[in-house]
Image (cartoon, rainbow, N blue to C red; front, side, top):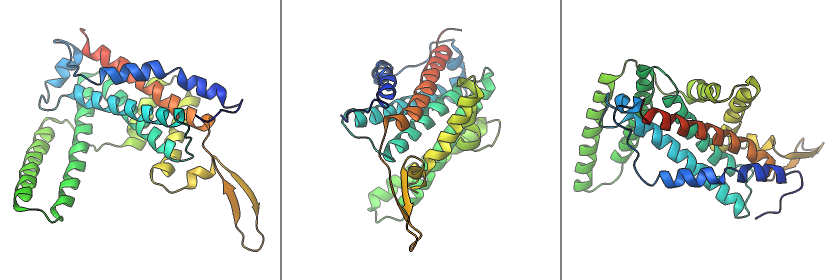
Amino acid sequence: MPIPTPSGLPYLEVMRATYEDLQRWKVRAADTEPPLRGSKMYIDDAVFPRHPISEVARTSLMLSGEHLRLARDAFEAGQLYPSAHFTVLRGALVGAAQGVWVLSPEDREERRERGLTVLTEMHTQMSKHYKRLEKLSLSETERQELRAQQSWLATRVEEVAAVRSGKAALNLTDTVIPEALDHVFPDAARRESGRTLWTLMSGDAHVLGWSTATRGQMGLTNRASGLAEGSVRGSFADIAQPFMAAHRLLRAGWSLFDRRCDHP
């Protein structure tokens, strides 16, 4: 792996302190974890047993952990990426925040509605994918299978809509991310830092490049062209902040999951 500079070593050590958690979450993701009978999540799941709310939340948490492990594996293999690392860490932040957002309310109806909101978004994206598949050159058998899947999805969409109490769409930027940060971080400074990271890393996720300028160094502007050269390298200091924010959210998410799935 790259030899960290003296200023980068403390950040690396802080991230390495999370590895035991990452391994434990990896192990538990290998098996199912149905809620205990009579637990809060067991009762929540009854609203839509075909796709339990507990599994919606658990999937978000599992995939967040997977993204964190990928970020870890890259820098432990000697690779520090000035943009790609933040795309991965944004995915980790989404999964962890989504899990916290679904599980955090004390009100059962609110937990259910949030879980069903995530499920609705999943169905919306699946429908878009199936529409795209319609344009491909499919065999007759493949087209029949696609139609059957679309029919199943249409039924599922109606079933979920029938048990929802509202119609709000999933909104990561204005709802999920800020509300999850508010639940987990007690101080305003870290909550604002998390919101800033979320918008900053959108530049990485959408490969627009502007976010790398905030992590790099610019040279002098050429007077003739008006252009300047810049350079950016991956650094442990830059990676550590979103890595640790996602880890903190994910740890809170798994704690909530265990509480909701245990006996009341």
